[in-house]
Image (cartoon, rainbow over all chains, first blue to last red; front, side, top):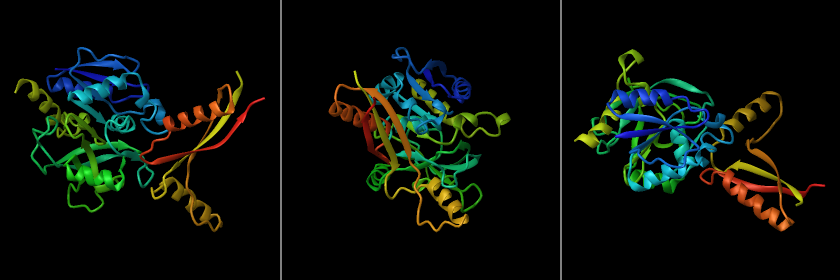
Length: 227
Length: 84
């Protein structure tokens, strides 16, 4: 299975994404945002970073890139699409996932490890986790406060589209790092082939990097093909 | 073709918490200004060609729809003028 890692001007987690995908045994290649075809690829990974310097809004300008029509096609065809951090912001700005990511409530760029609870494990991205397992994953963002109107939130909850939620690691009560509604850290689409999340699983795939809780997410993608 | 200048105002929708506005509000109060609230938005001044004022307005609104995110923002065409 070959993954396209989409590079926008200002992406900076592209190499981390490749490291994680390849560590899981997947093939990955970089694709510049001006490309108009993802022919030959099976999945698309939108990495973190600061596309276009977060100008206008985080992810807003990258969402208009030529390659995003192909990412939209992947999403509609049921191919796996993952957006992490800025990649999640790009997916919401493109309307591929609902809602928006607003400035953190405390207005700080927050870079730390957080608890992230797995809400469902019937997706390729989460099949190797236990349901309600709490992962230790790093976050690094200034605009991560998930927002959607009441109707959209009700639909997300009703259809079980919340995949990851911030949760206490050691019983702390201030575990929500950014003020996300319903503690939402990651969501999927109705079909379950598109994942958007603010925490960085690709930065948690090696003990040397401080943890491996992100690795099963990538290994689960491999299992989709071989298993 | 004549040139027009559109002024687009992009604001967070009512009811959406604006921490940036809150921070500015706090500073204003600290400096002795009794303010009730502050909201921070964006102003875009766009210069572009159009044949008529009517066409210019259509183009300006189309760009507003493209640049504002309807999930949490509204845009207003604040001003539109033909440039000399």
